[in-house]
Length: 267
Image (cartoon, rainbow, N blue to C red; front, side, top):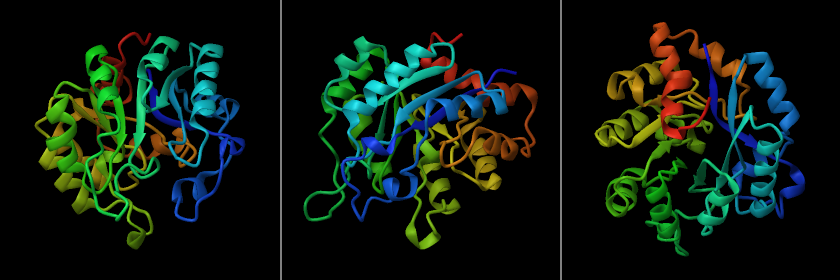
């Protein structure tokens, strides 16, 4: 059975410009996540291909990190599928060979205005339009206003943009020890389940009852496997997945076929 890990970070601490006290992403995960480690993880878990991208934070030199992601993907074209962190230069990255963009609403500081209020971000409108035109998927770690932003902002302006919602659209609140909350996820899934171009990865969801609820609400065709390394290794994520009562056909969709349809020319 073929497997694609659709959510994996490549990172080097040397790309970090500063470490902000408020940047949970960098404080917790400012560790090396090299191509060698990823390849070893892939071998251990029998992963065929991995979608790789940098840590999406304003504290990271994203130009250097994006370029390195492309470099290793060309070095190992049979193993890595490159996404880069979204910016205002989509044509440049598209011409260099990227297959998608990653956006992290908190890490890139595009959820709040200067007064700390939730906002719709207009920053990447032209990038979204380019992505919609060329069917380039957006892997989105959305913010607290995710439902309104999807319905009344992103898909209102670019209704055919392909979006993969990271972590089943979860919040990871400090009050819950940065763990996902089932009630919030289920509400998000129900509010957004009717968008045909919206998909969902199950990374960092350690509670299988949540994944079972997602299958009931969305159907298996909308779900995508990933590890979120270095949060977890693919072996850890697969061990949990194998405890679900899935048919082989459903496993093939979740582990390979669903993301393959989105990316296209993966062999």
